[in-house]
Amino acid sequence: MEIVGERFQKLSPPVFEDAADPVEAEDWLRTVENLFQFSRVSGEEKVLCASFMLRGSAGHWWDTVKCIKDVTTMTWGRFKELFRSKYFTAPIRALNMNEFIQLKQGNMIVAHYIHKFEQLSRFAEHIVSTDTLKTKRFLEGLKPELYRDVCMADIQRSNYSQVVERALIAEQAEQKIRKAQEMRRKTYAEPEATMDWK
Image (cartoon, rainbow, N blue to C red):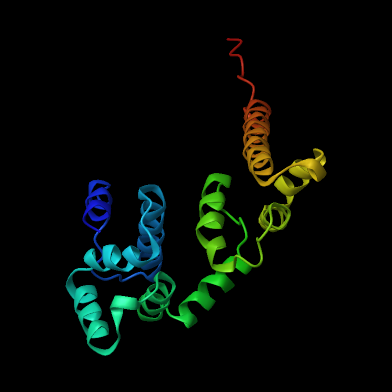
């Protein structure tokens, strides 16, 4: 454990104290899991490493867990289950999933829509479990004019990344067209200068 613990610590894992926003708890868990994978931490060592990073009220919560459960044999899956039940409850997960299901681009620029889509999609993994499903769901949330522009390309053979790129390009094209139209309107709307013949 010492060598693994040292290797894990060298990666500067984030400390977790408490989270006002449950998504922060989920983000911490994902970050720690990525670090485990990178530093090749084994199953039984994961609980020790993760619990070492708990501070403040999260540390107190873990002390309580240790009093009522045998953590020496606890699996990483069980730790995650307990952690999520404390910091990311089922009703909150359901709210995030519903937010993802109802997500539309609306007034967001495509970059913000992509960010929100990526952030919330993890709470509805069954809806975006394949690249095709993820692409379809992304397209459904786009503004109608961008959806049209992206679909004009041959998207049947496109993956999610390609469709996202096409949406960004389509938005840039829409902005250029809008600016050109505004310039034309301004040009034609300006009254002609009257000449003074005196």
